[in-house]
Each structure stands twice: as structure tokens, then as C-alpha cells.
Image 1 (cartoon, rainbow, N blue to C red):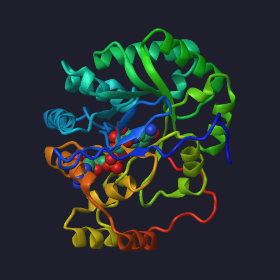
Image 2 (image 1 turned 90 degrees about the horizontal axis):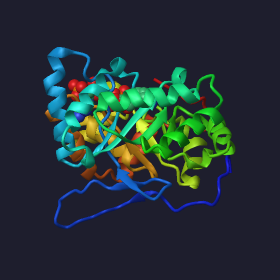
Image 3 (image 1 turned 120 degrees about the vertical axis):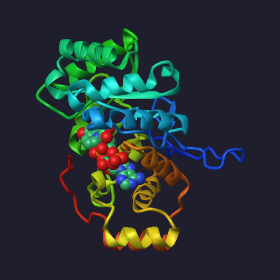
Length: 301
Ligand code: NAP
């Protein structure tokens, strides 16, 4: 075991098949017991281009309408403009979404974390976050940031907390600091071209029942013209984006947060939830994008 935490847990991907609804969004269980959708909505770069703002706002609202009710944002994105856009998208329907934002490492001291959270809440137009993540590890001791997260929970400003871009060693350290075992997720870069976490971090988190939240699941669009993905997409009568997303969804204990700024992309991504890759497709994708055979440093975007 690469890092230890009290007791192992069962797999976190739960099928919620409902014959009345064609393709319900499966849920992933957090260590706290609550479940979140396997697919959510990313927001990096949203809210930055005034010409695209209306389309992006409509895309977020559509995503919520069709079950992608996990929204991931960050104080860093557009210096708060993405949070402000999300605030507009969820106005009047806050209870429908599981809202995630992130504190910058430069704000991760005890006092600054609380202040940053207050500012994020203001931009998001809400009184609480569902999940607050440390965006990546910086200079502030983990123990101090965890104490701030605990205080935010006590104040009712956040419900849960987690981390992002933590490698295996960072996770081991986190789980050893007081209160560190309350971590609910590690949001990391994971897609067909970024499979390094399969060597050690992903299995360790799976054993601990801590879900991975996969960011950039279509590699910011760079995966879309890969011949192996196009071949599988043609066989399935799917799009390359759907193949890339469906592949991430074959992993246990992983959810994903593709960003889509248009109606068409949101609908397409949502439809990937029902896309089934066969063993043959998975083998072809493994050949084109081999799994890691040795430890690799955690990649970040
Ligand atoms: P991504 O989701 O892999 O890719 C987004 C790009 O793909 C956009 O250009 C989007 O275009 C396009 N796209 C989306 N759906 C598509 C479809 N069906 N067909 C064709 N193109 C499609 O990249 P990402 O935004 O980097 O990652 C997702 C989210 O993860 C971010 O938005 C952010 O919330 C989070 N993230 C976190 C970290 C971290 O450090 N924790 C780092 C990176 C990202 P349109 O806009 O035109 O739809």
C-alpha cells in the first residue's frame, strides 16, 4: 500500500440504472458517503471572452438541466470571472448543483484561505461550497491549510474539502497530518495521453476509497484528431470527444469534468455517459496510448 488511511473501502463507481430514464448519470461515492455525478462541468477559460459569454452561460445551464450537476471552478480562472459566470448560471437553482471551487496555494495560509473562500462565495452568489480544493501544493504547511478547511466546515462555508495536483507522496503526507483523512478527492490530469497515475496514484486512491476527479479529459481538444480515437469513434458512430470521455468513465473511482462552451458540446458530452467501449476498443486504445510501466512524475496543466 502506498499510503494508509483507516480501513479500505469498496469501489466507488455505482450504477444507478433507472429504466424510466435512458441513460442516468452514474454516481461516484465520496469518502463521506455522499455521491456526485460521474461527469460534471469544467469552467477554465469560461467567462473570459465577452463574445462567448452568452453561449457559455447557456451551456452551463443546459448541463445542469441534463444531469451534469457537478460544477468545477476556481478563484484562479479568469481572476474570478469563471466563478462569477457560474454564480449567474446557478442563480435561483443553487440546490441543484454540487459546487466545487479551489483556493490558490498563495492563499493557502489559515487566514488567507478563509478570506479567499469568502470572496469565492461572493462571486458565486452562495453561502456555501460543496467542495473546496487546494489547487496545487505550495509553501504553506498542509497542516495549516487543513486547519483552515476545518474552520470553514465549522462555519458552514464549505461542506467538504479536497486537493488537486497531489502526487502519491503529497497524498501520503496529507493523510498523516491531523485531520488530513477528511480529504474527499484529488483532482488531477487524466486522459488517454496522461496515464501516469495508473501506475501508483490511482490504485492507491482506489484502495482508500478517495475518488480521482479527472481534469482535461479530452486534453483541451488535442485528443480529437488522434487516428486511434477516430477509428473507435467511427466504429461506434460516436465522436472522438465521446470516445475520450467514455474511456475515462471505464475507470473505477474516477469522475471527470470536461469543459464545454457550447450547447452542442454539452449534449455530446452528456451522451458519452451511455457510450460503451468493447474489450476490443479498449485494447486498441491501450496499444495507441500504452499504460505506464514505471512511475512517472505527476503531470499538470
Ligand atoms: P478539456 O475539458 O479536456 O477540454 C476543453 C476543450 O474541449 C474546449 O476547447 C472545448 O471547446 C472542447 N470540447 C468540449 N467538449 C467537446 C466536444 N464534445 N467536441 C469537441 N470539442 C469539445 O480541458 P480543460 O478545460 O483543461 O479541463 C476541464 C476542466 O478541468 C477545466 O475546465 C477545469 O474546470 C478543470 N481543470 C483543473 C485543473 C487543475 O489544476 N485542478 C487544470 C486544468 C483543468 P468549447 O469550449 O468550444 O466547447
